[in-house]
Amino acid sequence: MLAIAPNYAQVHQNTGLIYYRKFQNTNRRAHLYQSILEFEWAANLENNAKNHTKLLQLYSQLLNDISRGLYHNQFI
Image (cartoon, rainbow, N blue to C red; front, side):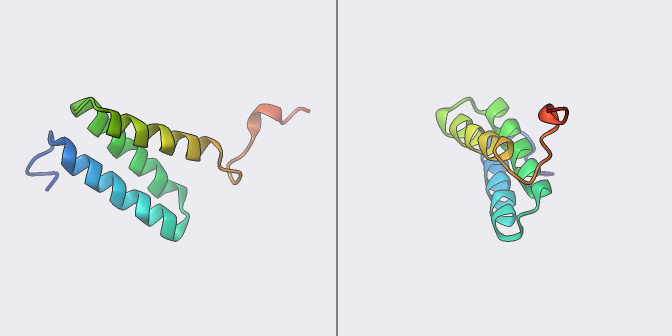
């Protein structure tokens, strides 16, 4: 569907939700990152509160992930 309608925001929203569901099932950060990219694309195409709210939720989940390295305090 992305090849048929690459500028349709609903397709990117649905794809982002699929990647987020895959992230919840597998806990792989690559799926979370791909979900963020899809929602960024959807927010660029369709500027509404739903896209921005989901994008903020994904960003906060990525930044609050305890499995990522905390490089800012490596010298403390």
